[in-house]
Length: 144
Image 1: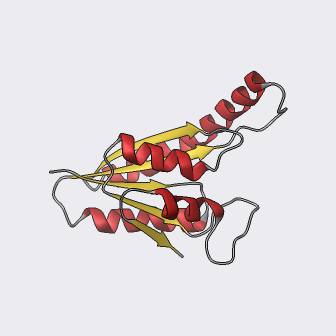
Image 2: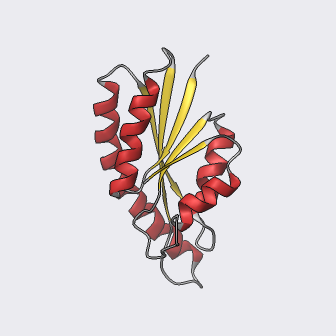
């Protein structure tokens, strides 16, 4: 049975450490798969959803290159890697998309950094990691 690990990635130091932790966890099972997922939030005029989506799509392209580099590095160690960039909803927390992806792809375990690149600071967890901890249907490891 394949063990599926999801890493919520935003380019921050904690999310890069989450990728390393996923690599470490992947050695426990011969059949393993790491899903590295980035969620970009569209920006732009609230009144024009088409423009907002287009901006989100452009931001997604920026992450795809970085995720491909990470994928090549991990796959060189004989670990299967799936990379995905999702465009979130303007009004929703990106953690909701991560949890939705985890459920849709039968993820066994989520690893997320404690704080990402967002401007909102929480006392203990970032808003995205807090959302994932509260809504995930599988175990979550938060990297500090």
